[in-house]
Amino acid sequence: MPAVTASAPGKIILFGEHAVVYGQPAIAVPVTQVQARCTVVAIPTAPAGRVEIDAPDIGLKSTLEELSPAHPLALPLHLVREQLGIPAFPACRLRITSTIPIASGLGSGAAVSVAVARAVSAFLGHPLSDEQVSGIAFRVDQTHHGTPSGIDNTVITYNQPIYFVRGEPFERLTLHHPFWMVIGNSGIASPTLTVVEEVRQRYQSSPSSIEPILLAIGEIVRQARAILASDSLEPLGALLTENHQRLQELGVSCPELDHLVNAALQNGALGAKLSGGGRGGNMIALVEEGQAARVADALRRAGAVSTLITRVG
Image 1 (cartoon, rainbow, N blue to C red):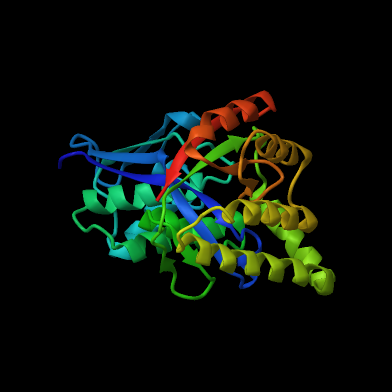
Image 2: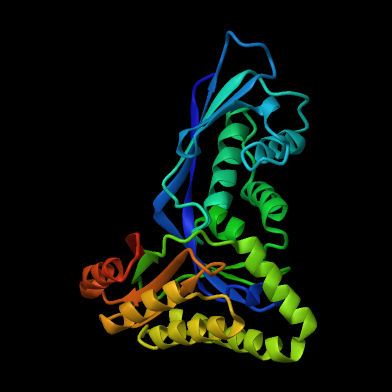
């Protein structure tokens, strides 16, 4: 069998994180400058069923049998086998690499699941559909993030901007104009599962204080959707900053992210906010193309461990 390789992009949530868990809409876009990649090759001399996994970015070299079935690199393999109804894999080796920072809000886990599911199913001669691949990535996210909204696996699988409401068919967004974003990595691992659970506990204990914030975020998302389809993107920046303020009220930001957001705004960004689970990970800033390098430099001076300039649309 020839080697088979598949890749998947990262993602950022433009608007709506956390509120999307409670039925509000969200908008997310792929980030193709960073990728997860999986290459599968046959091992003709090994016994059937032996699957070797090499993931140098996390220092892992193991066999499928040695890993827990719930391990984030093992689980998508078991789900592919379940989906295809095969009793065992032919002997093969997987090499999994990624340029997507882990625990940063860029969808690293979902991207790895998508790349693995696509590469392995194609290697077996039965490529899974996008819907099946997305479902596998969602089930992996459920195992490791508790109650994911489904937005990460969707935008990464379909590699297109989407408008997403949990439990409803997603909508592919066609952007009237492309725009530029600067992504700043705080360098702090974002504890998504912990933050999502804390928000849930606050919601359950005091829904009257949390519900208005979630509704306000939902309205921001709906306004942003209309702007993205219009002739002018100028109002989008103010909505980003307003969304960040609502996330601060929700308690999911942190001083480091707030500092980076302020640094971006003070150096020419049209708007900025955290992106993802919060308490670390990334923030994003909407910029005019000519200001992107200036904002990226300002973020690094303000403490960002890395920056990425991406064109959306």
